[in-house]
Length: 185
Image (cartoon, rainbow, N blue to C red; front, side, top):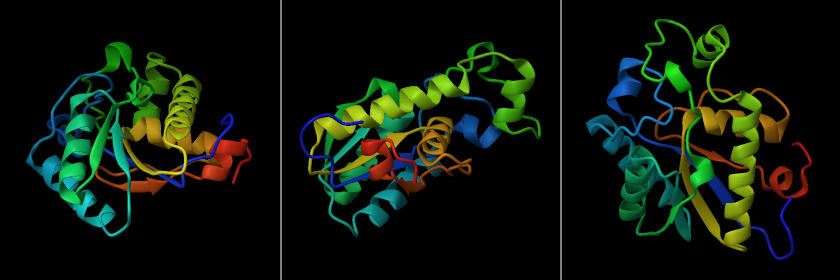
């Protein structure tokens, strides 16, 4: 729950654009890979789509693929960036980082290996990061660039139901009532 003061008017999560490891279907986690050409195009497309609305700020995870996506969105939509939010960093897959999914989904592979940061820890970290962002930007409209697993697990926790995979460059609305009041939507 958010303390005193107004909540943000709107908060949207955007998954970073594609990297070579996304294209190769490798677990990326905290490995700090840059966007590839497709990822830069996805970020520009997200920026054009988001520019149709009014926004105040773009923040991101500190990993370069998210920072690059945030900067491209900001440049495309004529926005300023508000820096990085450490809690928006992707799930730590431990020794599984870099492994090919080979037809498995990320949850199937990590469950089979039993390694890396637990899903509930990722969800709680994501919630705390979003609440921090919400508290820092009261009454504003914020875009936060993060990572697929973090977004999926955080929104699953907020809504109380499984959230589908978020595609590279996809924007999803954060249910502010759930974030602020703790009530599931």
